[in-house]
Length: 189
Image (cartoon, rainbow, N blue to C red; front, side, top):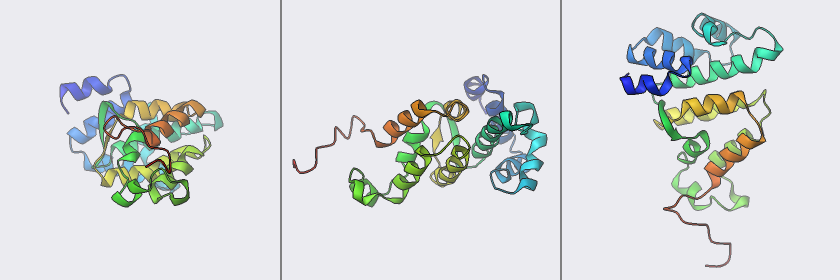
């Protein structure tokens, strides 16, 4: 990790911690964090020794969501193909990059929803208690795609999961980019 990377994550100690583990190539700790992404209570508890100082142990119902966010963000950042980029892609925008050629062609046709768009729809419909699980599912696909995203923003979005966050992620996923231009209304071409 360079000094620039450390500066990008210093305001969220969890991110700086995981970045340091990656820099040090601490494979055991990184594997423990990735293992905590699964549903196994045993694997989640193994990660507590690493995540305790960041609020990663669910002590009661009030702190359960925050602990889930800590576990999710740490586990995803510990994946070899995912990296933090301050000011980088939002989660919605990163998911858009997962679209294959065929799915891009039918992207705006509601009757032909592809697999990535369907998963994003389920993610956006998620309740506070479901959102981290759905982010982990898409995060595994992002890992295989070697995506870079803004983990600081992901962390704050998950902690404060709300309709506003859903709308922003939807706009980032379904919105157009300048190079694509606005979508033409159906039947006008």
